[in-house]
Length: 216
Image (cartoon, rainbow, N blue to C red; front, side):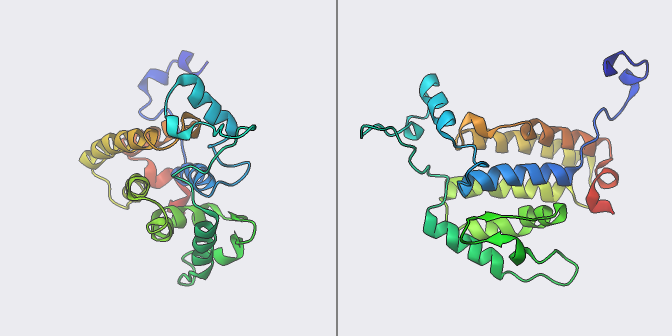
């Protein structure tokens, strides 16, 4: 329907995505999978069976050594002790007044998950806190692409954006997603993958700083 509008072809910006909400969706998917949170992880039994059906990523196939098939913990997910260490670290972090909410109140160490985070908390977590907490708990092959993703969002939401920067970011996010494809199962890639590229298009149209909650 939108494509039939007479002014559609002349619009410089055909989407209106809030980068901070995109960050939130990325964070939910990434953390849910890394912490292996039930209901949020994309590394499910169905995802493992899909890999078997496609004949790829044999290391992530279901373990059928016993009578029942089981899903072993993937190399990109934290072990229970590492998960507790990560959550305890997050709960111990103190921010300057007004920089972020009290994230410690949103950490459920025993339950192994986060609750009650605000949009700005996801923003701070994704760009400042996440990498510090996981860099010694996961392998370098997993941490590096996440570091690049964090840098992507940090540069995308910078106060100053050059057109050449946006072209580079558009190239970088493709490289990051390719690295992610080598780590996570196909089920990991939801609509946020396309949303990240759309965000760079908004940046090229010079709308990022005026269409995100971060500008308020």
